[in-house]
Length: 271
Image 1 (spheres, rainbow, N blue to C red):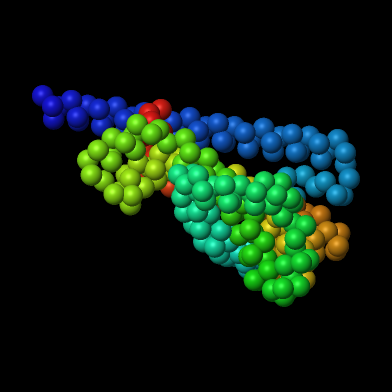
Image 2 (cartoon, rainbow, N blue to C red):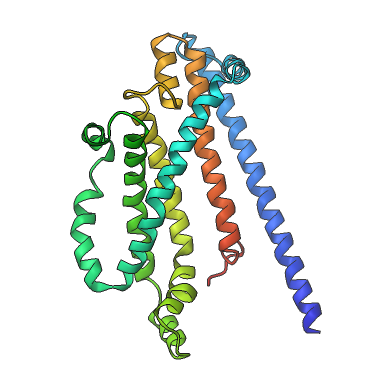
């Protein structure tokens, strides 16, 4: 009886997940169709060279892809973002979770957070370049700094919201600090960490464009500005589209990871 009930629950959960994926896919495709239609209408109505039609941009996109120029710049931008995630997300997540459960550490970090977080990180780019040079190091550091700031706050707030009753219940079974962190604090904070990463990636992608326009010969930001200076507007929009697809790819990866590590969330449950 219990086995049959478990099988039924698994089947219902699987069907619910498939239905959710199907609805999201249909909504996504409908949104793209509406945006392309609005873009086409605007391009026809304005009838200016700086706003080409989607078909023209699509041809430019394929042309750049065939010459491998687009892939070279996209891979350069993607590498910088992945390095920034590794350097910024994980230290911020660990430090934020610890600070959220340690009033003393939180008191030390709070002034730093309140002073640094509201500042536009892109404003530090000239100073960072003076210290780290004009190469990839300065760009990756700026992106990592952006991700670190936002994830730190998300992790700290998530750890603070963990119910004390859950922690006391685990401690009552003689669990040590590491076990409490692993089995209570970290699982409870995972959805907020995914949200913080998702938000920080959106900001980091915007900062990436700015960073790649300074003393750079690679990346989608460089390609956008280069096409703009050459008045190659279809190529410029193709590069902008590539940057948007790059952000969409990262968002999709975070969504997939969240479904794997937070399976209870997709069915409307809580930990």
